[in-house]
Length: 445
Length: 112
Image (tube, rainbow over all chains, first blue to last red; front, top):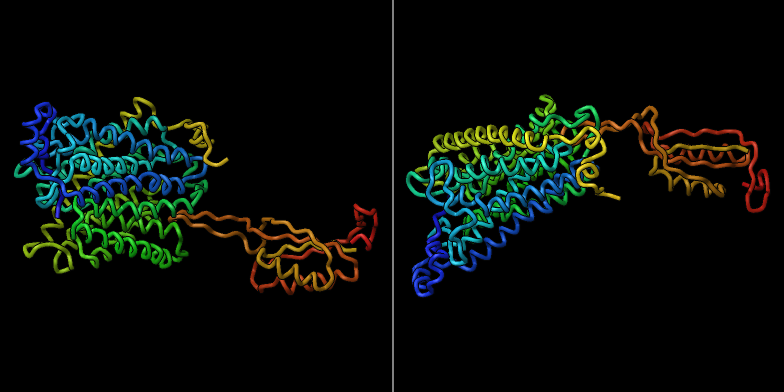
């Protein structure tokens, strides 16, 4: 199962014709009508993804930082999402899903949502349609969370203004093109690059997680380490809030994954159960990995495992059976554990909240693993003609293209931000905390 | 008179307080303190980043007592607060020069 989106037939009723009621009615009569059930589910899913960002991701990240940077972290997450929402309706949606274009972007025909009316529709994967405004909103939340995720690697030292400039440039040259490349089905020859290859990415393992994770890694390399890292202790200031954020992320992720079916059908149900079980396995396996490494099973380990599992099951949500998803979640959890607790300290880079270690690495395991668990022999929904080696190669190719695009795009976006606003807060602000220095407030009084 | 300072594990406080009450100790001062001895500190690990805290929380009890009751108090605290594990704490006994009850101005043993 893959996402498709065709230029809405309802777009025929463009504002140009709206002035001529008789003509408009004629066109509408021929257009497919959205099923209210599907529309209602997609509206719900859209709001669930918003819940993942605010307050979900904001609390998850905020709890992991020191208390002097709590508001800065949460505000960067929220404001990045808000910038993404506006850019999305101005030109992002058009670049990603605007209609016929090339393998890398659509076109600019729907800039400022030109031609979209309440009657416009977007195709799902069957012959159903949903209201285009709902589709635009749903996809908007994906752009919003991806932009916010990147800041997991750069918190506690990056200027708020630099973060906002970065988001604008990064969405334009990285996110909108990747969303198009992976998800746009314009038919033979005009689809996005990876979609054309037949890459499987149910809910955004490549577009959201690999993309955000790799961008985070590159950004934190250019930005540099936090002052005092790694000798000064920087323990999370509230694992309670991190646990609350984790719970909200998990709940919201059902909108992200099951919503990506674009209909309230059986495949959405499959995505739902996979989002339960892969995550459950991942949470437990992280704690198990901690025990095997000679530590105590920790609350933060449980939360980290949950996120790793959610990330890994994202591309596989509707592309795997429940037991394939359990294995995928468990494997991703163990690999991410090794990555953040062994590899990162050994290499010494300061991916502060492990945006790369969990989203990047978990996303890659998920994207490549989807090529395996899709197999009908493993309980996946692949057809009889499914060839695992071929599919895994396609998955691997899309992962590599995403890494390259995210890496190069992030370098450009970071340097643009550096040029306009400067990247880092002053040493004094970093020491006093970004809450007071950048926002003039304290999280706790 | 003796002044007895005992550093014990926090979870032993209630037991010690009851046991001392039972042998006739009428009052004590309790404070939450931090410190280290042979037990050293403890290690916290967040996603592989290890932080060792070298001070551990303990409870400090201070009791002033007549000479004849002091050995009994020390013995009681030692027995009740012991878990036979490292980090159980210490008891210090000092000579006490004088004691005054503020309300009445009584001094010496009667002030205790």
